[in-house]
Image: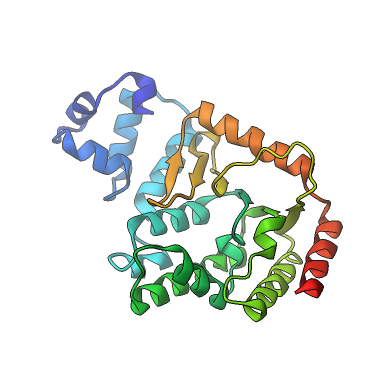
Length: 264
């Protein structure tokens, strides 16, 4: 909102009568912001979109109240940012090429991923904390108005055996169970899909309560990357749309996963 209005951080800080260094902290949600300050900035930025302003106020005033706050100071901040993003989303569309989506991972599978994929190796306590946090993220499906979740999963991810054969089979069985949830859709992109042009990293598109709050999250070895610019969002909407066209239908996807389990 600030950049669209043509304000720099010093000019925004002058509106509130605060030091300009605090603006970046406010915008990255490192500390809460009062509703009055949000409205004051919105007025200065000439933003009259009440739904957008109210959504920003809700985000600012609710900060620090999520279940994931118990992990603050224990896990990297980026992990908690992803969890908060999922919690605030109205829908979640993802594409995975190497792993089962985090929301759908079992405890044993998640633990195996953390043991295998992070270098330098983590201490046991760190692995257990990350595993416990990850397996709780699925709780968003139990809330009053759960988001619509669409998980596009490449065949490669389904065949990866993190933790060994038994763990991998149990993970696929768990994924099939989740696919029966009315808000959780699983579709498989098989190896033979024509014209495959997927992203090299996992992609999560989180739909905000208003379009201005849509966010893309990308996994990377250096931590999560968040994208907000409309041009970037549009590119990933196109990517996910292309992957959906190449994915198997829902029932065929379930049958496909069953077949992979039989082959294990």
